[in-house]
Length: 126
Image 1: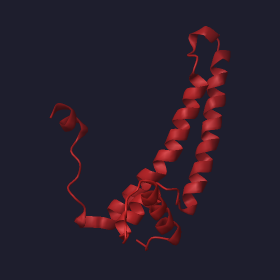
Image 2: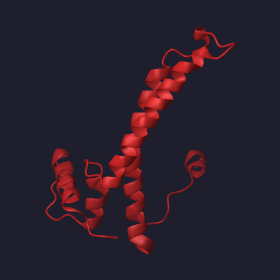
Image 3: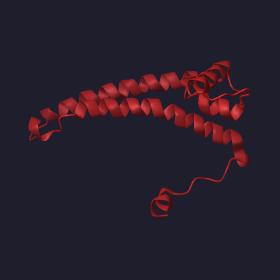
Image 4: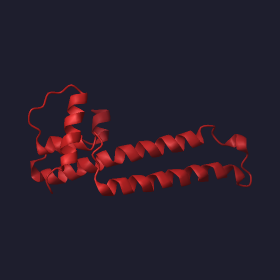
């Protein structure tokens, strides 16, 4: 994996300043994890975000058309369907790049990564 970009370094520094965390020396791991959270996104991410926005628009339009189906009354559909589609889609657009950056960082760490997280079943019943 390549070295962190200058945009990632600046974004990580801004994130730390915003959260009142003093950091004299930023490590590549810290830069990779915080840079994307502060808005430093690589080029392909913006393309994916645009595609996601188009998908949200299409999904919202499709949900609106559900009332035109035969046998479906407008009262049968939930009131907040459009807001739900918009909220869920925007949340995914903001969350997925952070997840992808974390996965790239985990691949970059390789075998030096800490032990994997326990299963969600183990946490709930533990």
